[in-house]
Image 1 (cartoon, helix red, strand yellow):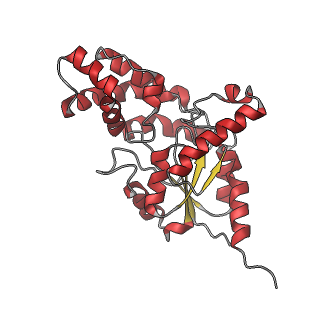
Image 2 (spheres, one colour):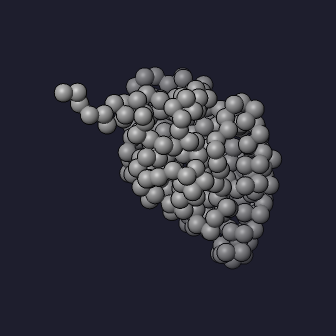
Image 3 (tube, one colour):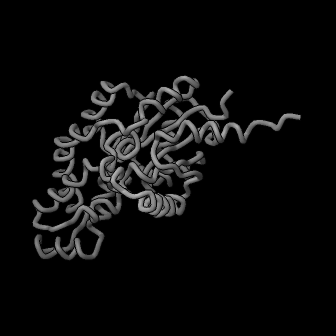
Length: 266
């Protein structure tokens, strides 16, 4: 019998959209429409947060705040956050369908968990309207988790544990230590830590690495290891109990953790 009852996955950079590319162009285009120049690096920095909170974090960056003040005539405020958010969400909805391919190994990990009888939950920094485009495309590839908690479903999102608490209720699982949270971002790991879950960070498929599968495959073994170590340091600092490259390695990790928890023969 497994020591675990459920696994809760993030979406982009974890189960779909290797490298977490879908929101990047949408953020840059959105700010450009307000006359503010931003970069992909700017857009990646707060990834994992609910999208309105993500926009607020970008606007709080001194160089972006200064750009906003120059373009709009006043410093960014709550109304500015709302204005950017209202433009961003439709743009992200329009492009997300092009970034819904499953991460290699994700379907096999999903089937492994199903075979063990574990519940499979999901949380995301995406809004419900964005996920309406994602869900059918993921399902067509064979990935259908048992629940979905979106950034705009609840008053509090990442890095608070509220989304995870909703997963516990939806999946009817407890205690928190019997639930694994898998994520590629610091806020997503922090969400699992705050809820008391076992947390697993992904170093190579997500936002922190920001590479396509082809770009990752082109790295030398030394460069790949250096990337893994750099991203792992960020995720461990956020509270990750374990770090692996991609979700393809999750079944082996679970087997290892369960073997460690079995009483020694004697």
